Each structure stands twice: as C-alpha cells, then as structure tokens.
Image (cartoon, rainbow, N blue to C red):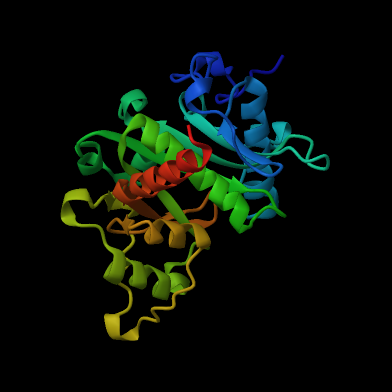
Length: 281
C-alpha cells in the first residue's frame, strides 16, 4: 500500500476551498475556447501537478524525487493550502485539458509559511500593509505559450487580486541554468535597474546569497534577454530583491520578484468598467 503524496488532498481539505458559495465571485473567464478558473476538485489539482511534471521534469531539467517519477506529478507541502489558477482548453481537440497554471497563496492563510522563504528573507514583505499574495509554480504547456494564454492567466490573477484586495505580490522568478557567471548580464541588469526600494527589498538568505552586481553599469546590455515571465512582472512595475539563489533541483537561478499591485488593480478596474459599460450591467 502506498501513501498518497502531500499535495494530493481534496480541495475540501485546503485552507481556502473553492466551493459553490465562492464560484459566483470567480466564474470562468473566457476567450474563445479557452477559460481561466480556480481549481474546484482533487482531479483539477492532480491535472495541475501532471502539467507541472511534464513541463519542469520532462521538458526542462528539474530533478524529481522517486515518488514524483512513480506518479508523474510535481507536488510539495504547499499545494494543499494554495489556490490553483488553471487555464483550460475547452476546444474539441483540447477536451478540457489543463494547459496553464499559477499557484496562489495569500498571507492570511499561509501562517507565515511560504515557498519563497526557503530562499529569501521576506520579513519586510510580510510587514507590508494589507493582504499579500505569493505567486509560484507558473507553467504553460508546449503549444500554448502565446499571448492569449498569458493574457488569460493575468486576467485571472487581476480578478483574484481585486477580489481579495491584495496589496503586494511576490515570488521567485527563474532564469535558466545554475552558473551565475553565464547570467552576469541579466542579473546585473536586474540589480542596477530594477532593485526594489529598501522598504520592500527581500534579501537572499545568507547561505544561499549570490551577488547580482557582477558587471558594472557601463558594461550592461540593457536589451537583456530575460525570460518572458520576468519581463512581464517588470512591465507591471515589479522589482527584484537583493541576491540571486541557485536552485539545483530545478536547474535555475532564482531572483525574488516584488510587485505592488497598484497598476494591476488599476488596469483591472479600467477593464471591468469598459466591459460592464459595453454589457450595460
């Protein structure tokens, strides 16, 4: 007899279950045959974990545990207390498959236990006024890495941020590879041009801290080839913390992303006003 892994619990066991009373505030948001919604069942969470396994461990270079290999799922202890934002392909070919996701953890339910805290000192972020939101485990299936899918994910996040009155988002953003010297331009660009203000600047924990200011300003190529997700956070007015962290399990070098939500909620409100104005409701 095998033990079901942490992260495979039913939605009813999570800290913020999505039940019938909550569906009204987060109905599926649609673009054609694609929809974004929150996970509503154990099957949804299993589908998310299977997607993450395919992307992180089969397509990329992450190193799974033996149990992950057996189940072909990516899971950890945070899954059971997070909300999971899903992109669904409802086309005849897609058959309702989960093709994208974000993992969302609010400070009011996290009990000060965040994935990011394993890499960064986030005490000043948690002291920031209002509800905070950790974003994590973002991935999109091959064939769906396009603007419409990402727009759906961000519509879902904006809806979530607006509903829960989130004041600050944070999480780990990843650059490929574990040699900071090969990422010298990217890390230096982020440090010199997008370092968070001191009041909301997390710092990599001492034993994992990797200096980011590898190159002087005059040697940086400001057309830095950053991953699209990190570029997206920066376009929203995001910042990075002090210090990178090498993650050997996922074969990445991480930076801590911090995004005050003023711009996110402002854009959502404008979109909502335009939509309701057209619909007359």
